[in-house]
Length: 123
Image 1 (cartoon, one colour):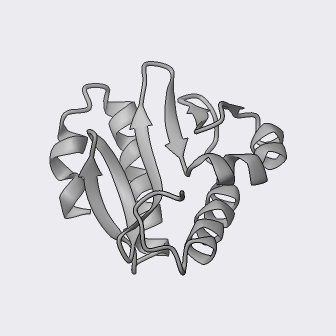
Image 2 (cartoon, one colour):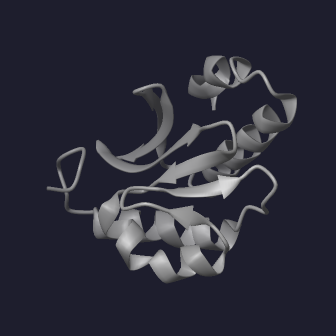
Image 3 (cartoon, helix red, strand yellow):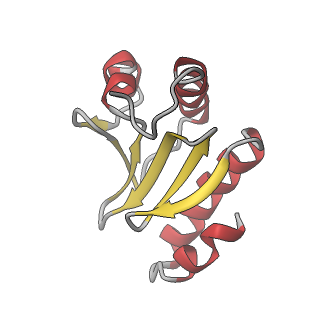
């Protein structure tokens, strides 16, 4: 989480800062073997040099980006959770509950699915 300190301090809205910190802390403690980095001004979690998941914030939501393959695989669950989505990410509104079970499934999937991948992104 140390890598995210400056990023979190730059979030102006206290409620948004708290939410982002809660989510990042949860990922960090649940998946303690993942490395934390800031790339492209986004907090990211990385496993053996490969991207697992990233987060970014917007005025109305927290974006979660686990890569297109993962969005496709979990599209129905993302929709059932009430989140809007694109090919590359889904959005958790600031007024919506974080579905940590879904987040855990997504991260576990990426870790397992990318276990043999040696590049940052899937090709």
